[in-house]
Amino acid sequence: MMGTFLVAVAFFGLLAFGMPVGFAIGVAGMVGIIDMGPRFLQMAPDRMFAGLDLFPFLAMPFFILAGEIMNRSGITQGLVRLADALVGWMRGGMAHSNMVASVMFAGITGSATADAAAFGNTMVPAMEKAGYKRSYAAAVTAAGSIIGPTIPPSTLAIIYGSIMGVSIAGLFAAGILPGLLICAICMGVIALTAKRKGLPKGEGRPSLCAVWAALKEGFLAALLPVFILGSILGGFATPTEAAAIAVAYALFVGGVIYRALSWRDLYEIGVRTTRITGVIFLIIASASILGWWMTFNRIPQAIAATLLAVSDNPQIIIALILVLLLLIGLVMDINATLIILAPVLAPLTAQIGMEPVHAGIMIILALNISLMTPPVGACLFVLASVTGEKVEAITRELWPFIIAEVAILAVIAFWSDLTLFIPRLLGL
Image (tube, rainbow, N blue to C red; front, side):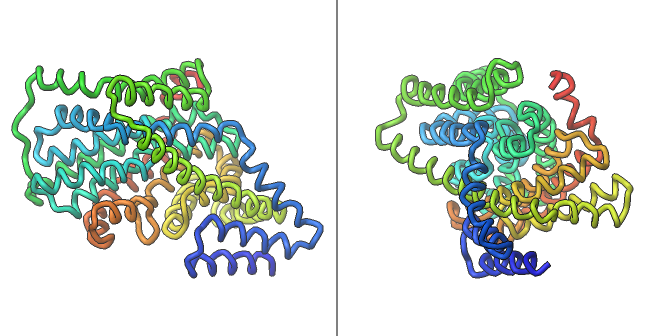
């Protein structure tokens, strides 16, 4: 009990003093191991290495790199123009275009922060110029950005599938409908509030020629997510192999066809990819120490027993899990939360009869929502940084989207057939 208290004090104390979450987790894990005795000290480096020694993790830097190449080469602008041609004619058309483009971009990177950074630099200024409030434009971008880690290729699905031994292809397939539902309900929120907010209206329905021109421009970019998903779900490539091929495709399209990449661009892309990957992998390695300590001390079993003592009703247990994830997501990095809590919650969901893929998507989506909620929502701070808008102003505009996405989370959590429809259709 004293060890648990010391670990909790170390972790939350270091976070309160501003230590990066990766280091705070590692130090907290070391405090727990030291409390167990000197003979356990060798477990720290062992677990850090073992935590990263998983082949599927190689997919993450490749997908991040592919997304950075597509973004830097300007290929993603073709996706934006295609989305605008499809839905830009509606009232609040640029907001709708932002959502549709987020779905397309999500199929390339699987990263919420990449979406937020890319559209924060492009869509937000364009929306502001067209008459939208900057805070509202940033809020729409934040709401759409969480589609990234939901629709495949999702980095969170790769992490969850790797550490829990769940089919990554199955998780990818299961994320398609939830991601599309998030887009649909956010577009519904935009449509319902468009007149009240006085959102600008588009110039009218585009002609078939205009749609065809936009389709030709964005075709090569739109083809990449289809290619990635088709190769993985069709069994032709593993997620890691598909990610490597995606990098080669992005380099060919951006460098050879569009001729939009210089050697300096490639250097800066490499640096940015390394930084993003380094942060994620540091968190994974550090969380492996803390995760081992928790497992050794049977803390997951204690948490599961506590929740089951409240009720043995599966619906109540699911509701408690969702509340737990949403609350912890308010104050912790989602990668760290996933790595620490997945081994705790997965056995509990199995006990109440949830399919592993369904449980994984539920956990992933709950954590995704925390990317746009204060005080530590990563997408909020990315957008505040690139747009110059205050976090408080963005948050005020975000609440209708947050409420809508929590409603979608509840539907997905309690209606397993919706999540599992595509995996079952594909035999995954």
